[in-house]
Length: 252
Image (cartoon, rainbow, N blue to C red; front, side):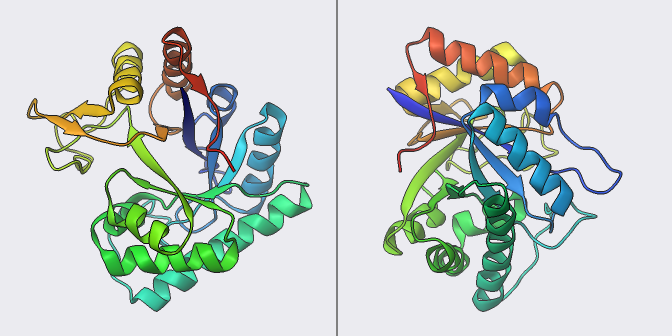
């Protein structure tokens, strides 16, 4: 059994340092690199690409809303055309820096509010899928398992990877519990590792109300800005290995 383990990284910018990219990168197989709108800047993008290349980690774009002060986690309502341009611009920017480092992008994963809105909004999901298809039709589109984004990617002829979150709480409908609510973010390495193995092997997750929710787990996310993210990533990687689950990027 093969599953991808991804992390959201490259989210520092200027003098501000966020996340533990150096600690997380040795344990993941895909890196979602911020593209300068919700976080990141050109220097951080280049350095994060170099770090991923050092560890043989697949490089992907992590576009978000243009909202540094809100870290891309505030909803911004835009037309589908504007969303399409927003995503194409950011993916193209990271692809250019990656090319300068001799690296090709492998995937795209929207960030924060853009990701969550596209999970439920078919028009927004379609705009993101169109942008990815136009900029790089061979790119894999990551989206929440069972979401509108996965459906839109498939309709656009893209390869898709259904994503699950070992360190986030779920609602009974399969959506993520909003940050700031009880149980929304999990930080205990043993608990996160156990959940990751269960998700990969059983293709289900236990929601915060105790119900079992069916999922499709192609890729598991570990957030690079979670406290002790490196310990979480190590614990998940080791637990998956102990369960006989191979970790690697989605097949091209």
